[in-house]
Image 1 (spheres, rainbow, N blue to C red):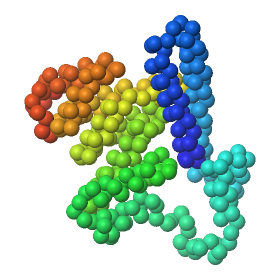
Image 2 (image 1 turned 180 degrees about the vertical axis):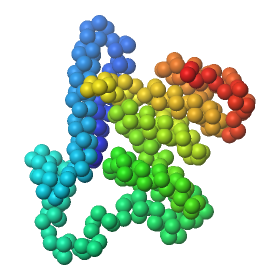
Image 3 (image 1 turned 90 degrees about the vertical axis):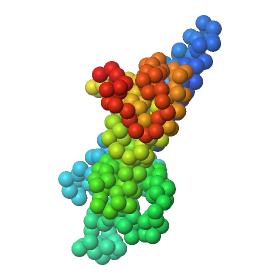
Image 4 (image 1 turned 45 degrees about the horizontal axis):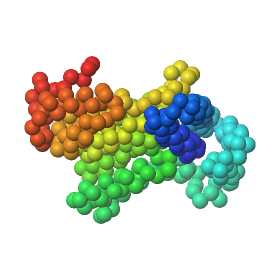
Length: 308
């Protein structure tokens, strides 16, 4: 169901891109064309509202399926899901129902080892980091490649249990396991920050990213700053269109703190950004710290004003 929510969310992102294109077209259009473009924009926003509600509906169903009180309740819920006849949901629901009707000795595992106690995807990843030679070499690029592959698995970035498990592993006593956990956490949060249509959740991911004390976040923060986008935010029971300017500002200010050469170059490229607040903040930081940034933040008294 998380995969279904992700698929629906992709439709939302496509509509956002169309709205961006229309926004650029309207500047050069005559009055009659502007009227048509505004009508198209309104129709797309209505469609976005419907999609946003559908995304949240499937996410709620994904939570509810794990909260059923017993076998009978779960069976009833899964049968209800079958009635939707959704390609991404029906096979999983049907397989689960079949498994529930299969005697334990025919399932491929014993009563003493139920399916719920089997190792999680994160657990398997961490175990590989402890035991496999390929993941225990000195080159961190190998572990980064594995982290990216894991984060790109369908539905993984929206799985709260997996997110919590990998974040907890960032304190693992094994330095190589710890590094892989950090890289994977960064990549999962990157996905949320750059891909989620719900900009409230995306912003929370950006805030989590800024709390990770590892230089690997710098490249992700640069991506966030360089990618203005639109999505929606939930206010009560209403969904309204918004942009990610708040997240971009948080990422920009964190780049100033990291003070690397890559961060400095990224801020220099913001001179012509379409958000005047981003332009002003970047310009102010570059004026305060005109020297070449080398990864060491200067005296805190010279830190740029964040505006509260």
